[in-house]
Length: 68
Image 1 (spheres, rainbow, N blue to C red):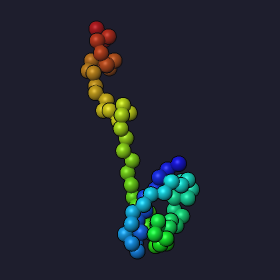
Image 2: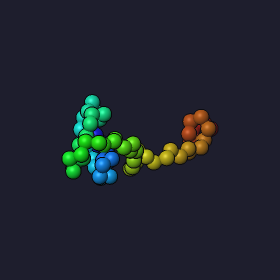
Image 3: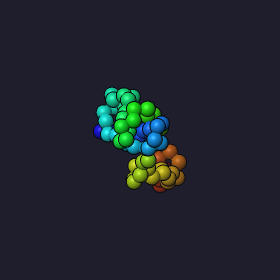
Image 4: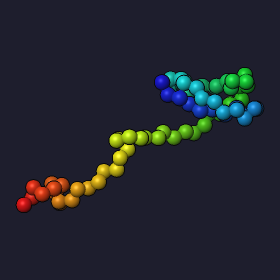
């Protein structure tokens, strides 16, 4: 389930909620009970092997020494 970040306009508290994507735009109540909140724009960090840059190995069309 995705995590969404919110900020309360009344007390300036930032908080996160785990909720289904279909509820991401629904109003959120801050931990202090205030209802005047706004959803924050967040980014996703990709780490690990999936984020590693692809390094070309050279060798033209086939990528290595098989093109004689």
